[in-house]
Length: 428
Image 1: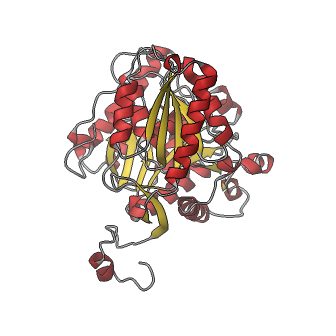
Image 2: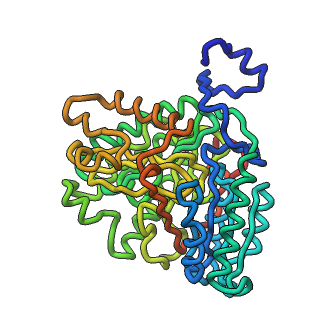
């Protein structure tokens, strides 16, 4: 409870209190969106809607890359419901204040539908069609003018208080090694336990890296039916990888000391902490109640899209599409990537990697191996850092200018009410 603010006083003022009685004000100047959600950044996204428009969009964004203008997009020409939903979710993310859509003009992407969706969210939005604007040079000039004008408009974005229960935090691991499951991953799990206790939304994913852990997760589900769904999601991932003839196990994992898929799975699983699992979501689903959620990232239906995720950045984008304000990234070998839209906090599992790549890392979880801290110590540090980043502190990847983004083709069926037993209805 905040000093000087009793539980009764907080309730009288309409300030949310978690189910555990914890009230934690993160910042007083969050960016308030028309739908009531609040952002920790006020980013403009420049969005290419086909690879043919990628260069023009990049040139529009380039002069503003140090000014919270980020480049995202979809390279495909053939329409895909998943990619549309992803871009709709990302362009209306709480951290996004406005969107400029860049179209060649003849691609299959539904640019009009996306423009209407972004404008309906109350955000400034515009579409520039290269074939209608006179070509490369004039489209770049017009796009830059729109960004410059919109930046000034966003200075008047309404502000308001952000509490812990309004925060969404995702987690992913990449460049894992034999230390990941011993230090960084379980430390993230400790931080998740703290955040869930404060009624925040916490999301873990990588169903392809949870093979062998399905029954353990089912035992933590808030209902038996949800437990069955969790088991099925991992079984789907196993079938997908079997058909493709590969698993989520890279040569670098083996070089770093991991020996089996099951060992990697147990390490990845430890990021989820110990809280009950409140639901299963899919890319673009935004949980409407605090708790711990599993994000199913492996496509539904027949195997037809090659790799379920082309890179860690594809997974980060999916976490952000589910509302993540911040993403915790565990790495042992030393991934240096960040992301567009939402800050990425790097938690380094290996002390040697941290010493070698200190500028790219935010948390030295490897100190646990050297007796310089405990899991609880590092978990508490990660928790504090999440709140500091939500207050405006820049992460290492932000400071270095990392704004990676990947989006490909996938297919997902809507989730049902059994996937969200903690509240009525489901995002879908």
